[in-house]
Length: 404
Image (cartoon, rainbow, N blue to C red; front, side, top):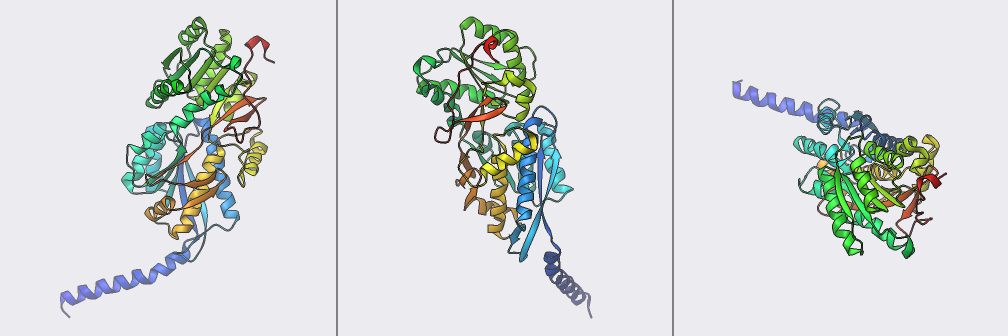
């Protein structure tokens, strides 16, 4: 037998072995490995704690129901979740995704937290490895400019979010509406984007912002902005910054007797740690949110009550990331495979039922939900927007020395 024939036979033999092994490999496959990177330490850890809990509950629930049926394997598979702490650091978020892909061999990735702080760097890394990244909690314009082919995004529309305080003000008796509102945002691309939109949208609703300034992240001295607010008679503040900066600003407001009837925070005012740190000084503060247990959708009330029993506090975020996992489970089953590209196609081509309500992605890879507003009352976040689901109106905050 000549060498050429021997080589051909060897190729055929190896091919037969590999082909015969495929059914065995499918039969031996018992789980779907999902990875995520979360800010479990660092300045975003309060949000990371809530996101971790929601993912773990979503995994526990789908596994309790029997797992996910994968047509390719002809059976249900259980989900295993692997979480890596990205320490609220963008560079470490990228490295966490690389480790999840290279070392842990994950099938797909669930979103981390915080746009430029974690999600965008992670999506860029996932794109390099051609691994599907099921994203949320990133501003849509930031995400869209990258034209990702291995990711999708579930988040709110920025202009809708920015319009919320003005809609709330217009729902108040005219005498109670702010007359001298101000905007303070962190000096980041996201913060500057919020500031610009506040200026534009405020005019649409008939309001004029008395001033708008950026804050240096991580500073413990806000005396300049606080004194300026007092001098100008500011009666409402729209604030976009981290949890740590939001807490320190409010503490210094009280120390310097800056009284505003309306304080609305984005990004840093909604995690449960906000009330834990400030206690009664958080009373009447408004925060944005992604979800509410008061939403009239199957499973929403139950999820919120489970969180309340576990942590002794409410959450306006866990429904969003729980729903993100719900969408992924449904898309995997619809795709009938663990091929990330095909799962992404299923996400784009389907309608999903979640604790956030029905979800449908656009052709650009984005699905939009409504950004909520909530007011801290006695340690709970009471839903005040959207109006159709809100159970209580906004309460104007009294001066510091009149609060209980």
